[in-house]
Image (cartoon, rainbow, N blue to C red; front, side, top):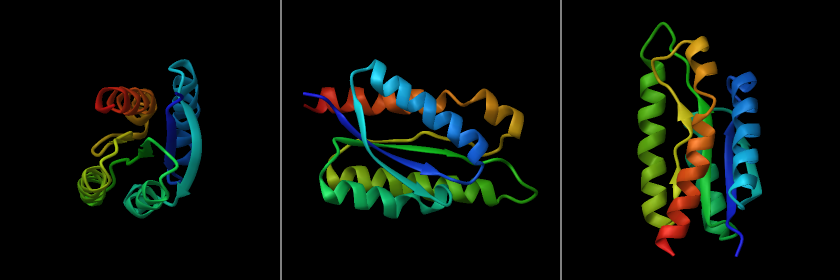
Length: 135
């Protein structure tokens, strides 16, 4: 059985999330999983609603989030990631399906974000392993 993944990808910092998405898709293919759904959202803060939609439709075995939150002049980046991560965990528990956190940040520069493009690959691997292990 092929594992079906849904991707929720943030458009904010799209130059980076685009590369993360490509790497995530390639790694899914390498692992024998298939990205069957992809939902684009404005930013990481907008992910929970899209995740809920994918999980409630029941067409995917797991969801992978892909986003990049770069540090700004305020603590906005920390608030965004903390609240998004909390809701992502809640949705995973509510639907009993893995939702992997592939959001890099907070507190990083654009250069550091480029160095963390592989977070998408790690998130895909996490989602696939969790589907396999939860059976």
